[in-house]
Image (cartoon, rainbow over all chains, first blue to last red; front, side):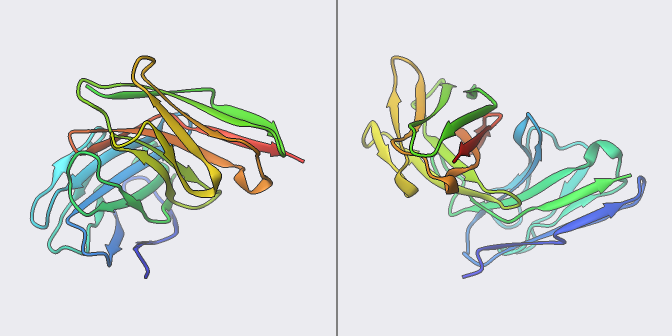
Length: 114
Length: 111
């Protein structure tokens, strides 16, 4: 099974441009998440969705937006990219959003904003 | 609120030596604790998790971790390191359905 796929694998983006990072899961998981990974900071939650049609803000939501139109897809949009959004972005999913659920991660998107 | 602290951003061991990666947590509720591994240029993969069933948790690739409530610790160990264990390791605690990650520990294995 594919699990979670993310696209693109990597991207160089000019500051001020918009971009959508795509995430698709085939496990029929209810909950999905977007994290950014920065050296020395671990992974920080950007946005999450407990079920299709709902979204919520994580620890570092500013400058990002998400939508969850269906169970499988959870795109992350940068409306106007800034250099501080240079990072590695990981999408994850879990069967439910409850305490103790295992999250499964995609391979990541490496984004460089110049 | 929940938080995780990983002691040591980088650990280096010789092949065949004991691996010990330290994790301390803070939680206002009985915690669920996780260790994830990230190999170069890949996503995170679950190594093991503690869900209150047993204090000693065995995971994949010979790793295990022991939950010690009195010490608020969940250290990861492996008796004998292999070159293929070189990776970054993340400890995480579950808080209100969300994972809170530590800063990560990079493990190097010397031949």
